Length: 265
Image (cartoon, rainbow, N blue to C red; front, side, top):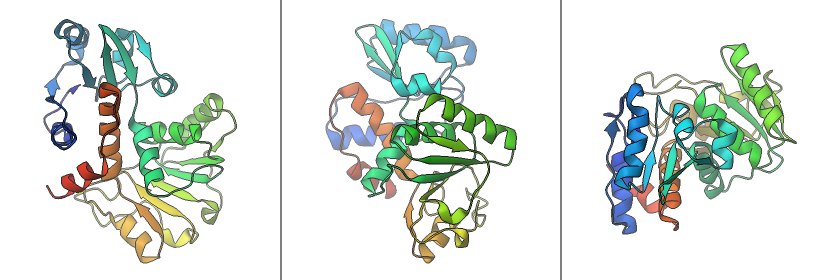
């Protein structure tokens, strides 16, 4: 992992656990790379023959100019979180949104032609919204404290993904099939806060949260109390990490066992 700072990252714990469970002969380390040193660090990936790298803040956009190729989602997002070294050529990927989509699918959530409400308009919301758009959802509504940001994201989605209606004005909350909290509301230590009143949602609505500290946020707890299906944020964190491993190793990775074991730690 390269980023600045990286000392609090959970990535080494997740990947080294997965390497153990999945029988991968490898080691994963977090390396602090200052912005001015990014070019030299990328050169080091080639020179040392490092098989793969994850990229975190603040390098996700800037690293693109140092790479040879991008996949579709990295191109769409203009951001990279995974790099694969293919014989000295570096290809960039983005697994952030894809990790969330896979989590929804493995949880039995249908996405085709569904209406989605996204809470927040930051990087996570953007990645998830783009991936949901590629899955063929009918509408994505971006709701954010700053309307300018939600409008800009909605317009970007509409321009990049055909057939998806992206809006930034909240319609009837009961009309949504999926609500995703992409804000930090409810994160430790402010664990009693919720980003939206779940009483406004329909009984068919799935409620997802990308916050994973606590594992079950107050938002999810209230949704569960109403009998709504919920999806926890830790699964997204694990999935986006393990999708990187599938890119590097070109093999299927056992994700559920890693998630269950990680929860115990």
